[in-house]
Image (tube, rainbow, N blue to C red; front, side):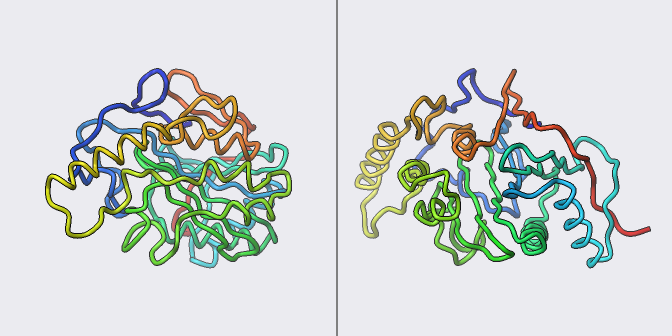
Length: 268
């Protein structure tokens, strides 16, 4: 379950100044409370057409190789929540830690062990979302909604993070490229300005980018509830994939029954 600060429509209003760096925070700074308001933080794995019990065993094997164990206890903040398979997908909600590289290695181990496709899907502070797509233990594709977060020391260093709708449609035949493409649109306010602009020209470019963002900020799919740049836009992508979710009182819940909850600890 995820709780966040937002208005009743799960959108965030107000434009930052053009030199704001709040939306450019790399993973090493995650968890800080910028400005006293915390938006939606969401990290989860989806594994395609495999069972929860097999996902758990593969995770157990990965951490045993690291000299660690999975324990079926813990507090709300430090447990993973593994759900039973719901139609096509088995969902794993990450806990509150930020061991980004280790967890990415773990998901690839599961994918290779089970010969399956999967996603890592995340939202950072309600400002943007992204994914990593993998299959048989190999990374296939990345998407990050803000260009400036997809370079250097950020989420997927050295990778192009534009997303590939054709690749997704090939791997998931129940989707067409036309279904996926509207979701893979980056936020124009994160694009880099041309070099050599004066301060006035930068202000004009900044206003132009925000005006374009406002025009594009509509649901990415017919009948959707959230604009593509709103805090909960990722929920529309999950709906496209066929992953059920519920929201009530600013809480997001995934209704598939839990298979088990667990945390990772040093072997006793």
